[in-house]
Every structure is written in structure tokens, then in C-alpha cells.
Length: 70
Image (cartoon, rainbow, N blue to C red; front, side):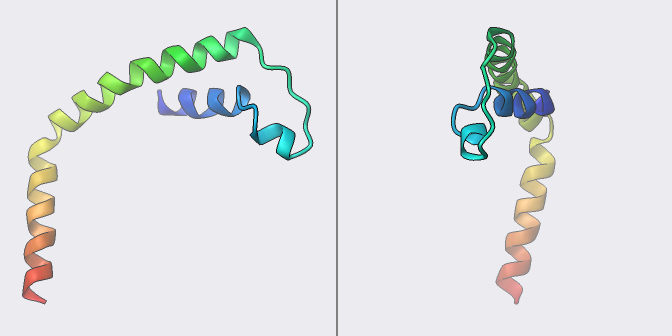
């Protein structure tokens, strides 16, 4: 899903391609794909973080503990 957001973001960019000297006509299809996939990825990121929250906490505590000992 992140790849779809990333690639479609390039394809609808009004700043990137003109800066490179490439003329691009933004198609409504890619604009809709970008908007819809970006909207869907936000709750997916939240769910992903929630599923891995204990690992994130354990890793953070481990990193801070190592930093204190050094």
C-alpha cells in the first residue's frame, strides 16, 4: 500500500517533474488512486503500530537502558 501511495504521489506531483524538465499531464485516475490509497493507509499504520506496540516499547526501553549505562 505504501508503494502505491509513493508511486502515485510521484505521478500526481506538480513540482517534481516540471523541476526535472518533464511535462506531465496529471490524470484524474492517478489523483484518485493517490487520494484513496493515502486515506486507507492511515488506519493501516495505526493498526500496524498497535499490533507491534509491545515490541516497540521493549525496544525503546532496551535502547534507553543501554544509553544510560554507557
